[in-house]
Amino acid sequence: MSKTKLFFDCEFTGLHQNTTLLSIGFVSENGKTFYAEFNDFDSTQLDEWLKENVIKNLKFNDYFQKLIETKNDISYKSNTKNITKKLTKWLEHFGEIEIFSDCLSYDWVLFCQLFGGALNIPKNVYYIPFDICTMFKMKGIDPDINREEFSETKDSIEKHNSLFDAQIIKKCFLKLEVIEGVIVH
Image (cartoon, rainbow, N blue to C red):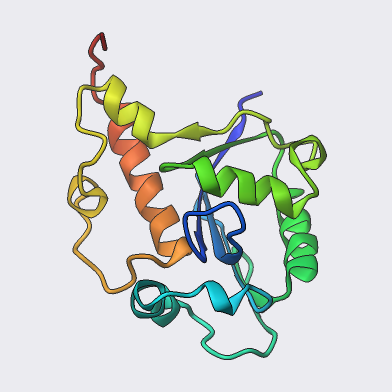
């Protein structure tokens, strides 16, 4: 049985060891989505760039808990404990899962941290994540390429929203999947 591919992205309070999650977004290969915003992030870590480029692109720009749920999509705002419970339940709807992201060094660590570390992630999630940066490199494409242009998505004000970025990652993956690779030295 093949594994379900999930494409995900996180927004967080900076590229440093003590960063905290602002939002997390997932898109499954069949189009189901999960999006959550955290109301317990460390606001003292927000700089002007984050306020201007990430905070303004959050769906729920107030503190209070929110939930929007349809058959295929969940959007949620709460604290880390509640989001982890909701995400765990959403992940259970899939069989075995492979996770793909962009430059996922921070994203994967923060994902694992939600569950108390890598050894505690849900059992149906494959413990090795995959990234499209490596795919770009293996296909002979500059890994620093503009993702919206490559995926043929119009530039959007939603950039730096984790759900939008997860959708872009999925589009890039699907396009990369059919491109012949090159040998990387």
